[in-house]
Image (cartoon, rainbow over all chains, first blue to last red; front, top):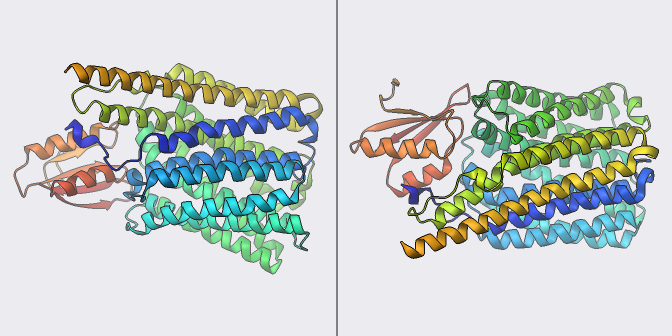
Length: 432
Length: 75
């Protein structure tokens, strides 16, 4: 029985871990930028340091963990097996790490040539991932809303990268393009078409599984991914045809779709069978509340576009959606995925003769809860920093460095425990 | 628990992993060849599918409106 639990073809633990351990370093680097630059970073969403920090968070933290987790988890949630997962993981990790560093440096030091070097690195990385995961996913029928969502998220990533290339070239070569509209569209495809659809597709599986809630009702979960994609196509048409009403309609529709998904998830969480509120549950509660708030801001701005012109509006929105929303969801999931993968590999090490230790022996609940409080405090400090940059920008940067350093310390601690248990299991097997 | 399709049912919808897998394999062990059992879950269990295929069991799954997947397994 125990042997049947093994996934012979599952990638080794090293495949996703390299991504999970690199991501907090990028978040710390973003915090360090804020600590060094202070109020200047928060002066405008277009400041070089703000552009650098945004990409350190979205590519360096979010995309890093998303791709690492997907390479590992596609066989489990979709029955889609990547060919040579470890090779793909190595290439994608290296390309994403180097590409993100060069892109962020290009923005921060206002070096257009560096942007143009980062572009082919990031495009190649995205192409490798899209090719490997696309091939694996096209080989399986869409029997669940999760598989459909995963399939529809891939074009979201492709378009976000494509628009990123266009923007980088336009910035470096001074092409006459309507940059603000294209930047918003780039963010829309990246955060909605890729990250949002991917998050929903994963949530359909992990929310009921990890938090013991009822399942997502079938109809809305099948419709959400194509609805997001359709609205993004409308937005794109609005930008191409230069029709502001179309863009605003799509933006409002996307915000509404996100609010419905988040509200539904909150309702499912309220019906959970697990009495204990663990770190993942609390992280998701924070993430959902922040996302609903941010999307209410977006829908309001789609009705009154002048609102978005207010100083600090865009940065306030970005901090709520990225740090309060996406980062909370991602760390919350990481706190389930890392102990589970470690447990699974220890189970295989034991060869059904030595049992694996309980998952809380890999990463303790108390350690996760304490780090979560640090994340919550640094999120609040960042919001206050956007409102009162002269006073609080640097403390907010320091808080963000500390909260993410703590996350890294927790993950490294989990790895130490994993290695210790693996050695103990090997020793026990030797004398059996 | 009984069901129109079969009286052998594992309702694993609020069970923690790996309990759904273990309970399903335990029930399969009690079935005679050709007998069928039903697994209820809020997700498609792809790792279980793989083991079922390896062991020569046929299965079919269907999603209900409330999000439940009904997986009918033939021993």
